[in-house]
Amino acid sequence: MVTQHEHKDFRPLDHLAIIMDGNGRWAKQKNLPRIAGHQQGVEAVTRIVDACIRHNIRVLSLFAFSSENWGRPQQEVNALMELLLHFLATQRQKMLDGGIRLRVIGDVSRLSGPVQQALDEAQQVTSKGQTLTLVLALSYGGRDEIMRAARQIAKSVSRGELDPDQLDNKQFSTFLDTGDIPEPDLLIRTSGEMRISNFLLWQSAYAELYFTDVLWPDFDADELQKAIDDYLRRKRRFGLTDDQLSQQCQEEIND
Ligand code: FPP
Image 1 (cartoon, rainbow, N blue to C red):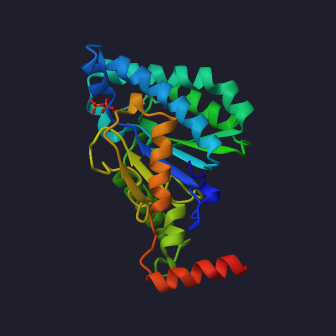
Image 2 (image 1 turned 120 degrees about the vertical axis):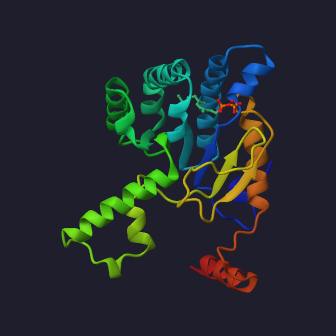
Image 3 (image 1 turned 120 degrees about the horizontal axis):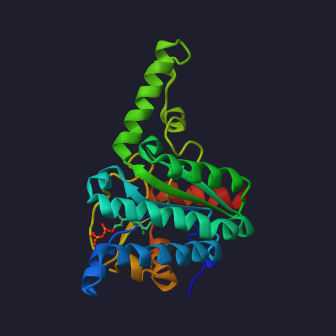
């Protein structure tokens, strides 16, 4: 097992993003209702949070409920919201003890009052957490997030607070829900689907992508280790040449 810091071309894995897919198929394979798959999906979330802390990962972003998921049968939407409330209640102490800071991204205004209140409260009480930022994407869509940012920017410009000619990538990013959160280094999708599905569209421009056939309820620390090992073998060029990268690495070592 190679840990991040032992690897020769050390590129820290600070931010891991995951599209947790396959709960429904997991349940179907076992002749269980879909919600049983989501319940096991929550178990996988708690396992992976622990594993991320062991790997010194600073940010874990989870696609928990997409803008499109509102179209699922009402019974499944309700069950997912109940699971979320249960997760917040049962994980509260663990988050506080473990230095986990909860952040929510997405159009939270579409969530019910009680869910919004529980999320606000959890974000507030965990706001001092220093070990891991757990980003839950809820009622989230990447295009929707970019559009909401564009709307805010247009309003700022019309109020004379922002000069459109001065707007650059860095400033644009601050209008996104992720604000000051660093961009994902690695994006994992489980269940064999090879799509981004509107998750962190802007932020994942240079993320390494990792796809696995494993269904989300079966994803565990060993599967995470495989993804990290794969990530550590990648050469991240960010559009530069090999020579430029080597020079950059040398400069970082000399600093
Ligand atoms: C995708 O599986 C998963 C979801 C739409 C929801 C993910 C939610 C959880 C893991 C539980 C809630 C999370 C927290 C943090 C409380 P799918 O239903 O699309 O599976 P399928 O493609 O096999 O049908």
